[in-house]
Image 1: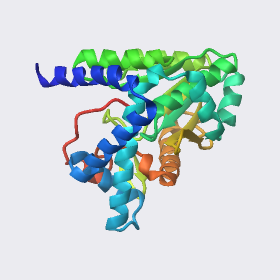
Image 2: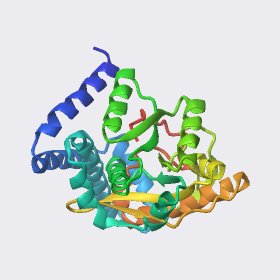
Image 3: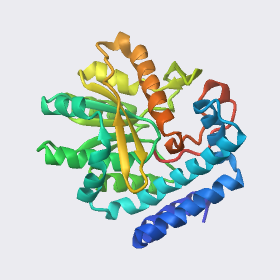
Length: 307
C-alpha cells in the first residue's frame, strides 16, 4: 500500500473510530496528540511558531512556547471535531454556537433582502462547524439551507471524494478549486440567486493573488472573495471562527465595500486587515502551519491539508 492509500485509510479510520468515542475522551486524546506534536518540534509546529511570532511580535521565547502548544492543541481539536461532526446534532451545534456569534446582523439582513453573501474566513477555529451554524440559521430563517464552498483537490482522489462527502453531509455544496471555470460559474450563480458562499481566504494557492500587508509584512491573498462580490453585488463579510472552552464562537467584521472590479485589490487588503484584528484576538486558534508571507516562500510548502 503506497503513502496516498495509507493517508486515505487513516482518514477513513478516523471518521469511523473517533465518532464512536465519548466526546470527553476523544477531546483528551487529541489534546494530548497536539501537545506531543508541539513538543516534538516538527516542521508544522516550527512553521506555526514562525507565523505566530508575527502575530504576537512582543512575545518572548517562553510565551511563544506556550502559544505554540495551545495552537497545536487547537489544531488537534479541529481534527477531533471534524471526525465527529457528521454524527453531531446540527440543532445542538446551533444552540451552543449562536449565543457566541457576533456581528452577523448585516449578513442576515442582506440574505433576508435576497442579496448574496460572501464570507471570507481565515484558517481559524472550526470553519466546518461555523458552516453548520450558518446552514442551520438559514433553515430557521426559511431560506434555502445550502452553503457553497470550494475545496482543494487532494490526493488520492478517494480522499478528496471522502472530504466532499463529509462536507456535503453537513449541508455544503462543494466545488473543486482546480475546476476553476466550473467553480466560478457555480459561485456567481449561487450569489446572484441570493445564496451564501464561504471561502477560506488567508492563503493564496493560485499564484494569482494580490500583495497585501499582513501584520506589517508583504503576503499574497486570494482575490476570489472580493472579485465575486464585485461581480454579483454580494456582501463581502470577513468572519473568524474560534473555540471557546466548551463550544464555539464566530466573530464577523464589518462588511467590506467592493463597488466594482477596480476596488478588488483595496477590498482584499481590507479583508487582510480584518483578519489581522480577528486573529490577534485568539492567535492560538489560527491554524496556519504553512508558509504565508513572501519572506517565507523559499521554504518548501507541506502537502496540502483540507480547508
